[in-house]
Amino acid sequence: MKLLFDLVPALFFFLVYMGGKALPDSAATLASGLLGSISGEVPADKAPFLLATAVMIVVTVVQVGWSLAAGRKVGKMLLISLALVIVFGGATLWLRDPTFIKWKASVLYWLFAVVFLGSDLLLGKNLVRAMMEKQLGLPDVVWRRLNLSWVAFFMLLGFLNLYVAYRFSESAWVNFKLFGVIGLMILFVFAQSLLLSRHLQKEEGK
Image 1: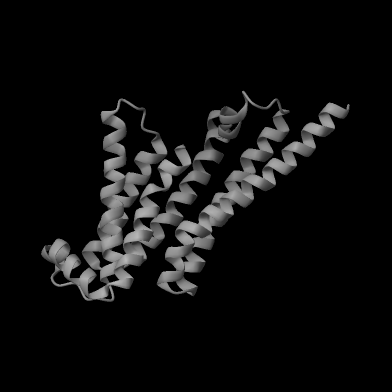
Image 2: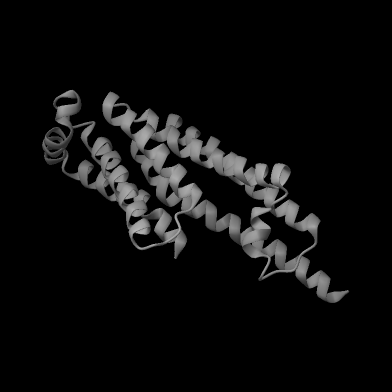
């Protein structure tokens, strides 16, 4: 459920962008009305991306506000994501340059990697272990490998995001941002599950 909650901004970004691509003139009119005060009339070719960015900022702010109003604990990474969305998204809207919001995704993935690695090395807290220890009993070395695998995954995901952003079309990147990342995440978790199941079978067989 939390994963779906975290994906809501990306889903809205995708839907608004695709809607804008399907109706470019309407998107340009709407974008000019909403964002024109920032830097004037918005051309049709830039309207879908700018509208999608604006909506993503609003949705992320609403997510955090709703969580606070409901008395729920707002995770640090959600707050960091909010800050990055506002800074990079704001730069995209102000300068009308999609490069900033594309970089936001990579910066966020790399921050995940730094947090997972730094918590283990500097604070002695393995985040993967903290999340899964109640369900699994594993040796320290296995927990360390799992944590490092998440570090490597997020680092590679950040570089892959930039590769797609600079090597492929804008539409391809938008699709990758939602479906590609979800697909890679599912594959990675599935691969980890297979490795863990083999390790648990070996432990039971001793």
